[in-house]
Length: 165
Image 1 (cartoon, rainbow, N blue to C red):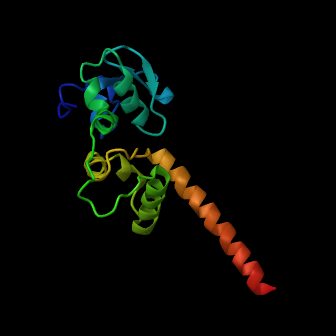
Image 2 (cartoon, rainbow, N blue to C red):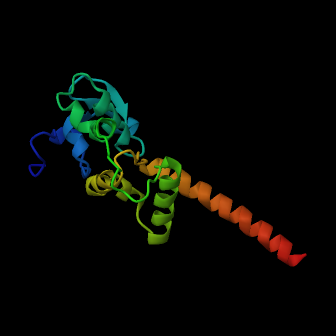
Image 3 (cartoon, one colour):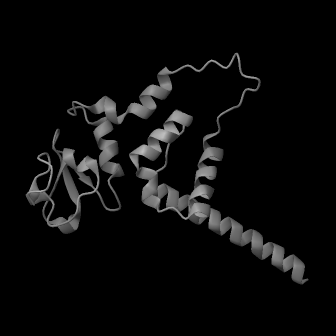
């Protein structure tokens, strides 16, 4: 375990590969089967059942975190930036739901892994394109893809039933 960065306690990893940079701010708690991590700043216990997004959200709210604003970057910047569209030939209105649906369809068509939505470079790209877009977690993305699947399945059943009459 000598290959771990100094900010990660080697006893906290229990032979598992730490992939997220968020682990530099948390320590795994025993028993490992409960999947809880202790915040290194305030001591709160946060569950990490599916991924580390809950831990990342905690760091954005943690009053003891000295880098709290860095974890709030997307919302912080989006509320303080004013975009001038006076030279634009058309004015478009941002629609969070339509943008999320486009993202869902992109993930389906491109067969991207759900964890890709948590990639920092991908999030930076989305932020540069639309600062107000709230990037969903991989769990939310999975739920939206399943919802889309159910809707398309219903449409197909209706279409086939009309064609077979």
